[in-house]
Image (tube, rainbow, N blue to C red; front, side):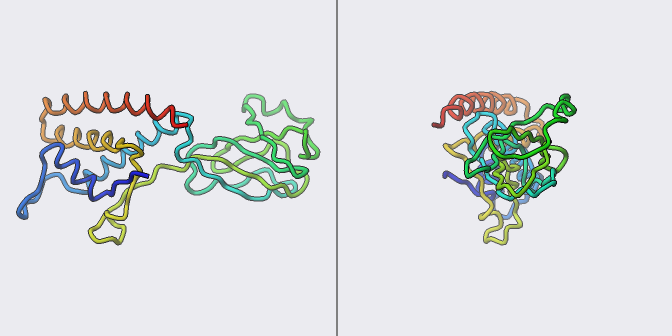
Length: 216
């Protein structure tokens, strides 16, 4: 993991757009504003990596499905479900996501979850919903991407923000740095520098997409 702390990223942004604060000076762009832009940029970068299919941030939730219960709360950090497994007869089987427009096509699916019977699921609001009610206790594995981590300066560390870190994988945090730096120069109405940063962001985005999709 190649991580970078929030406090360092803020300094990186100030250096990139020449907004350094020296000798007690106070910038008209606060650290909190820069951090918010960094968080927005990090969320965008995070989504790019999730879309590559290389499972950079994959997590697993485990629980037991109960007889007759079709809905189970999603984890608090749930962003996107990738797949669901059910263990029946000592073997793990893949569940299948059903299409909502076919919600009434499965009315004859009551019965056992035991393999080789298919089990269908979908994400409804804040729940993982099974179309076929389970007929007993079955172990379930829910594979999902969590929401992108949000950096903060209120992490209790000294200096503040030094324990709040994101993983730049291979220097890809530069995307977030340039993204936030562009917001700073736009605030300063420096459109020439904004254009320069815009081109750098586009090039970095293309590079990340080309490299991130072949992680194996």
